[in-house]
Length: 332
Image 1 (cartoon, helix red, strand yellow):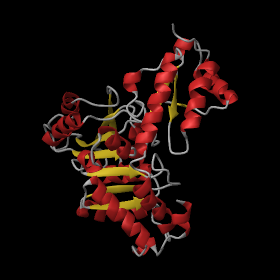
Image 2 (cartoon, helix red, strand yellow; image 1 turned 90 degrees about the vertical axis):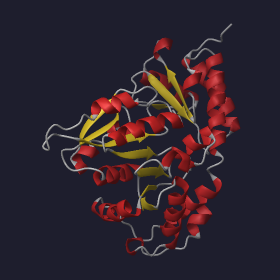
Image 3 (cartoon, rainbow, N blue to C red; image 1 turned 135 degrees about the vertical axis):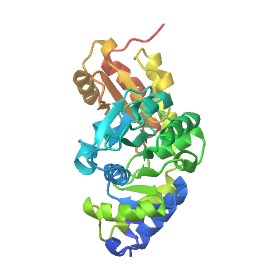
């Protein structure tokens, strides 16, 4: 990837003259089954542009209450698009059609505050990398369409979801009006994301990208990393999923409170409360043992995230070191 960056063909991205950016945009649009894609610095920016495209100030955003656009984008929907946020309690990060219908009642008068956009996240970060089954996606998107809502996919880990289900990414993403894809997650790029949608929407998004401060110059040095990742780092996501499964099974066997049914992709969550530990104490013990896990939105839950910089030897060490550091007892 570093070699691809060094050899990148570049131009002025603000004038749409960077061939590496153009190629990345073309490939991602095709990958997710949309007409066009737009390269931006971050997935948060991509999400915020999308929400602005689909709404007017005072409209309502419907989203799962622990989704990224609600808890990790620092009030962006309100600050950038003037959106009210209606967070709904989900199961495994997913919403039911009935919840969407209840949250989007029919207006009784033209001045009524109205739901404008539904945002879904796949895979769902706070739920532990959980995947949306395609039939559930179809049902909840159909419910949104009944009320004229636009539908956005925060697909920061879309490719993990597609690999986990054995489908082409477009099988997940083509049903949405806009789709965010992040390059700096499992794909291993230093930064960057894309927003994809119709030609008309991406035409409007180009101006919003400038307004958000996301226009760049010789951005091909970053886009080249994305092109490399599409060629080399998509299919290998299955290795990350296998590593996460190995961790989960080993930790469960060693007595850690890991729920195997929640391990869909490359996240493994551990609730340290049954171990009599606080989150910060648990993370401190792990740091001292030479293992890096991270916190989550949940007060007693920590997580491991497998990725291309973690190999089989690292996984084997973590299988032993984590239970020891957290004081788990081998089951009999």
